[in-house]
Image (tube, rainbow, N blue to C red; front, side, top):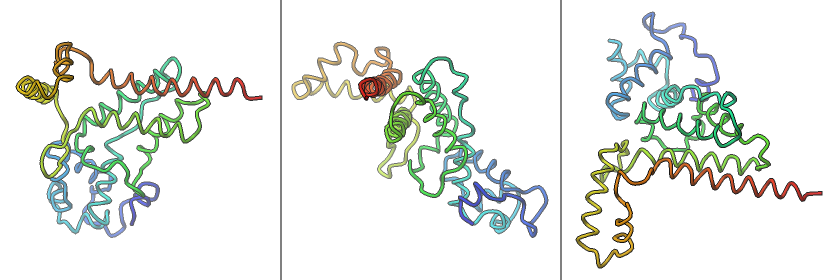
Length: 245
């Protein structure tokens, strides 16, 4: 059974399933708990079965394998998106709320960063609802469908960049904390001072707050820049519409 069939099809307990009380929903719930606590690498069919005290084969009566389990975990972790219709104002405050809620989702489930952005055939109803919510915020802006979608992808890419960095040679991706960011900034700042003749622009920038965690508002700055850019595009499309006969 494919992930699509599990997302959009019948999830009832199989007639020949093992013990009462086991269900796809419960399996996924426990798998998410394990991933939240120990990372995605800790999730396996054997490990999740052991959480229930069942054999690994018991899980295979409900799910074809680990790939489908992770797809279901991902959609469950995202949950339902914010109701942007309740956010006053136009497209911008709605997308600000969407972005901040997405950031909170990634921080509740940091293993989401270990997954590829695009997973063809593995998109579930919750993920699609997040996309629907963001695109709906552009209603009445005269942006084309492609521009709306590209804007959402630019915004979601920014959110992902806030909270993960390559953590090892193996390129494991883990959330970056404020403490880690401060340590990185301090270390880079010392290198720049030590080799000042090679990095004059960075040295000058340091004099006005670069690499200082107390100066600037990195995440909010990035969000403003992306939304400002989208706002320019919306303004251009409004101007184009006003001169169209």
